[in-house]
Structures are given as structure tokens and as C-alpha cells.
Length: 121
Image (cartoon, rainbow, N blue to C red; front, side, top):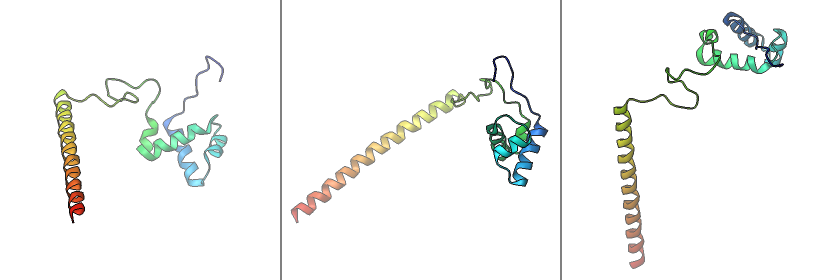
């Protein structure tokens, strides 16, 4: 696409009609894109994924631009946790790691004892 030419915007109603027609008539992404003059079939695939995950309402949401950091939906990063919750989770991870280490040592001791008993029989 040439520089300075914005992508075409489609309404939620149009997206819903394309996805529902495609599913009802068993059209492929390419066939649906060709029929409705959509330049890239991947757009139709994206619309279908949104339709299946979020329902028809999901097609009406504007998804352009960078995700808002205030809403905690930054791409690739989980939302910030409350300080108390984060501390509790860290403490729990430490307890579970200590428990794992203890159980590994116990298992090694038991295995060694069994090996020693077999050796002396």
C-alpha cells in the first residue's frame, strides 16, 4: 500500500455480515474477501476469530492504535498487581520452592536407604 494512504475502515455491521455470510455459505477467507472486495483475506480471518471469541459485539470495538496502559491491556505485559497481592504471591512462590527442595532431598534419602537395604540383603 502506498505511503500516506490509510487502511479502509469497515463498520461493525459490515464485519458481522461478512463473517455470518461466510460461515452460513461455507466460504473460505479468500472467497469472502473477494466477494466483499476486501484487499486481504487475513482481515476476514481476524474478524472471524474476534466473532468466535467475543461474539458479534466484539466486531464493533475500534482496535486501532496502541493499547492503553491505564487499562492494563498493554501488549505482552500482564496488568500491574496490587502491592499486597504481589508480596503474597512472592511469599507463596518461596514457600513452594522450599517445599519442593525438601521433598527432593527426602526422596533422595529414601532412595538411598532402599538402595542400601538391597545391597545388604
